[in-house]
Length: 150
Image 1 (cartoon, rainbow, N blue to C red):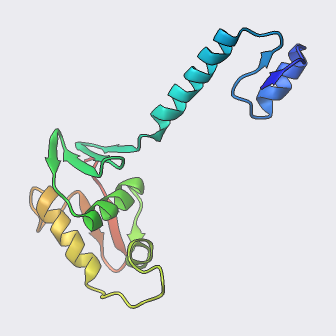
Image 2: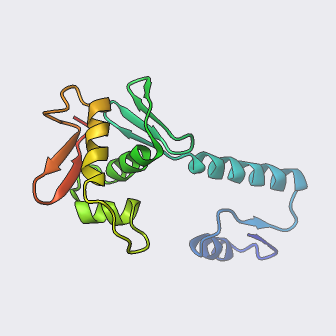
């Protein structure tokens, strides 16, 4: 906020109302520029969307997935699936939830095997033993859960 109201109660009210900063007149133009630059730096750092889970890292800004420091090549569909699972780590996502969020936005039929096929491809890329998965676990009769922090 940039204002002529310089009482402490005005400043407190402005900040409580949601202002990021409160500057009263008269003000220095160089101080105003510095405060704006600081605010822009804070918002720029928030724009980066990286998810860490145990040894895994998903960089949503660059569409990259890493296990420890090694990049693992994944398709865009696999990336979206990883993103959804990692954002909901520790929570079971039903097959229907995943299908509706990633594939079927129009109410069109989606092959029911599309999800297990993509899960299987991901497991082949990230699990030590894809036949006994630890990272992407199946909750039988319900769906899948990301357990990558183990």
